Length: 276
Image 1: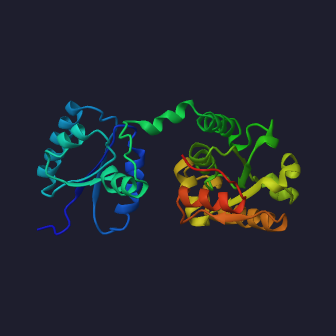
Image 2: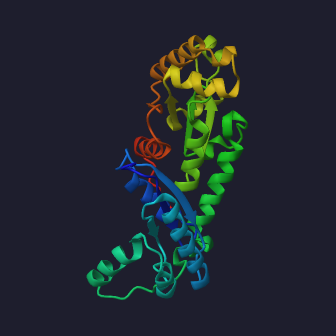
Image 3: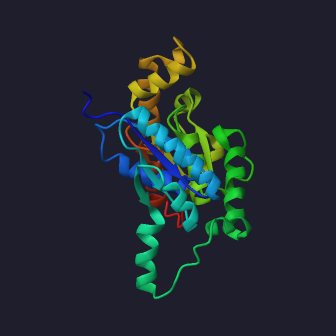
């Protein structure tokens, strides 16, 4: 008999479910030998929807032969009660955190569904949307316009993680992040692209292992010079030499998550932005 059956994990929320899922991923990562099937169920804002979720939870338990795990950030007590008709391990974020806060602060919480979503009308939210639009417009060196407005400009060889990191910085922290590829012509000139010279203080480099880069490029352009391991070694070596000579701080993205890379960039570039 399998001692470690696949366990279905449900992330359930009256909103997007991102908060429950983010915390849940951190918790599940502590059990690398376990196998988890992850299901996000957002916008569960009624008793009827909660009952439907409970049915899905019961079905998953029968199929897995193991009790599901439910990580939820539901606020409404009646909705929570309907959900708990299923047999599962329930990790209720509000139950575990709101009551201790109420006791500490000496006040009752509002227990308002979707309270956080009021940020849509806030200046912070508008700043974040502006940052996302800026980042999309300045992806992969497409535009040099208004680079002076960038909070950070990521540089590195193609496929070193610049685009996903830029988008995460914009979406999570409201950072206007441009990114610019270092190409063979830059290595031949042995200098930074001309457009970047006056923004040197905003530059941050990303590098990656040649083996991982070749693997990523092989998926994009199979059996090409672009994906050749020796070419990847050459480009990475030249890029790192260039960044070192130009005193550009840089980070190896090979074994780091986007969250870790972004946090390191925020720290090293001294960007004082709060996450969303």
